[in-house]
Image 1: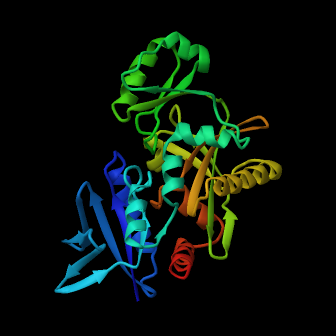
Image 2: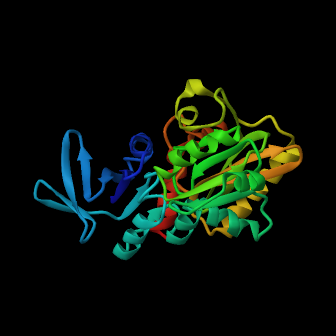
Image 3: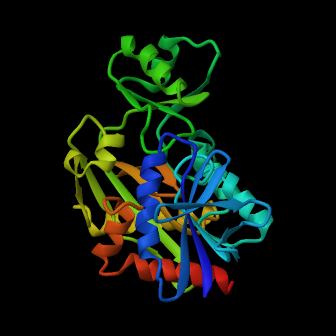
Length: 324
């Protein structure tokens, strides 16, 4: 049987979420088909976790040794949100090792991780995105000029962080400086983005082997000011309706757009695209190439809403890469 590594952990503020995602994916990988191993990564510490035992990963050939037996990995599934699993770094290592993996390649991962670059690129293909200004740590800026550009209220968010860490909704000019300080603490580049008052929707897409479909759209109703980290991962802090309460026509438009974005960015495996819809206007917010995979995350819920199982989807992804 092939040896499957499920990567979890990472070097970002999303470490704990990634561990939960990794454990859920690990549980769903079919043990009757594969030998599966959970690989925890933090900084230079990479180890395989089996019960209470930790076995160091040999990065020279992506293997580990247990009871005198050297075990080489044949495939990796990345569930690291943030650095280095969502920005292309880990993908680059696996490419150099010649190990296939489930998910997007270096280019798609790096491009989508940088929100400003991704939005600017997609805009050139006619994808509608919110108006924004990007600031770099240390640069001079004028608060009034920024507000003149994006208006109030607005969102301040790190340009390359996930899971809504460091995001602030700014309602008055006096709050902007503190919001920027919060975001700059996490990232050297910060986006100030126009607030769009509408319905928040998200759509998963998977393409692997003979799989090629957009998942049922989820409608997000946060019980807080906006869908922040707590609302994403605490089931009590948001209501999610799958499928979303939108017209068949809008459902078709969002699914078609999500599939088109997937192809434009040359994605692979499972992604999730977030939107705000205001009237007939669809604004793309963000592309997640390593979406949350905890039991409370959108993609597992969307797969269940379709009557499918995550186990079957993962098997298709693994097989398409092993036999590709």
